[in-house]
Image (tube, rainbow, N blue to C red):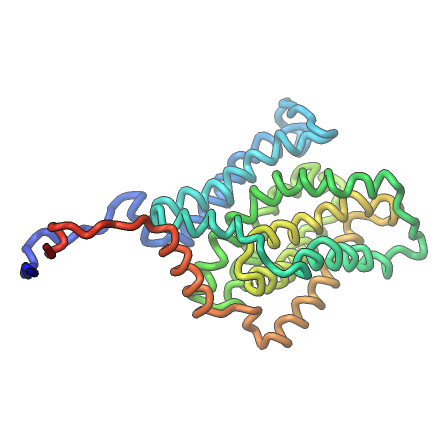
Length: 326
């Protein structure tokens, strides 16, 4: 026997939108994320930039880890910015379902082997080749020590640079941007923001202060903006796999850290950036033309994948008398 209960709307019982800071974050998650990611990181970097590692106006010294003070001076701000902001905004705006999707992309490692080959072999090789036109013939074979440092360096980069940035830029921001602006529009927004986030670090030893030429931040921004197009394409083609995005990102950093000084001993940081920017610009243009600006983005496929994962993660609820059935 089935009892049917008519539900009539009751005056004054409609849920009110949340007010205050939480309501603002829930209504404008992307704006909130970008503001927090940049603001929190920049605030946390101020002591390092003012220290002898930067402008030298504040006599505070940061402990060195693995031969550099950047881990203690820069990493906390990086973790607080993109990673911390993505977690906070997701929790407020989307609750537990959103957090499941956000964390779930971190475990999407089951992709075709050639995507890992692209991130770990093809892109590093292209990075190395980008320096050849600027080496003036001074190219040397990498040492055994450089090869031995590849895997340890990759692990360190994964748990520092990779996990501090990619859960924010690619995991949080990119899917939201693509749902509103498409892949190419998202790349045009995210790339400049990603580049802007790094800019204060050019006032520290991270960016070669005080010896870096004033054009180096601009060339770095060009590389970041164009390489972001490649990152967007890989992220989409792998079904939004964050592990591949992480490896692609840190693979670039690790290649420069381990091989560059051995192979190109006479090359300056500015020349290195020029080669990287040219290579990434060529790759970005090719991908935009070949994909006609879609960069592998399939809206229907992404939505279906997220719905399936949400349904699988949702606990089964038993139907009782409160559901209107007996």
